[in-house]
Image (cartoon, rainbow, N blue to C red; front, side):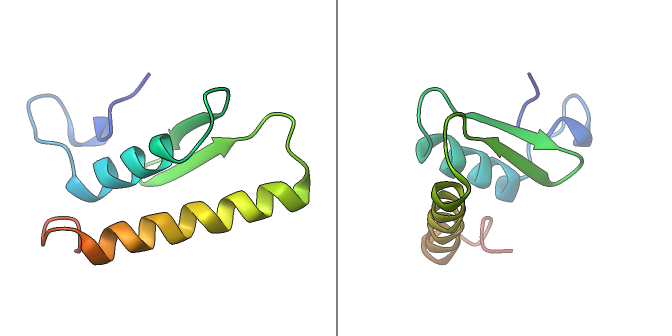
Length: 79
């Protein structure tokens, strides 16, 4: 399991934007879904037992939740 910002190295504070996205994704998915980092600043969400249409709807809902949080966030998350 990786933290919100393993790429920055030990002892460095996490990137606020990555931490915000991680929190929003975790808060807006089901208990059986998997949310993780893929690469440096990419995220993956696995949605077991979800059709393509449902997955598309979920992806749009997650995108909107992240956009709303960025709009309502502090200067650190709005960069």
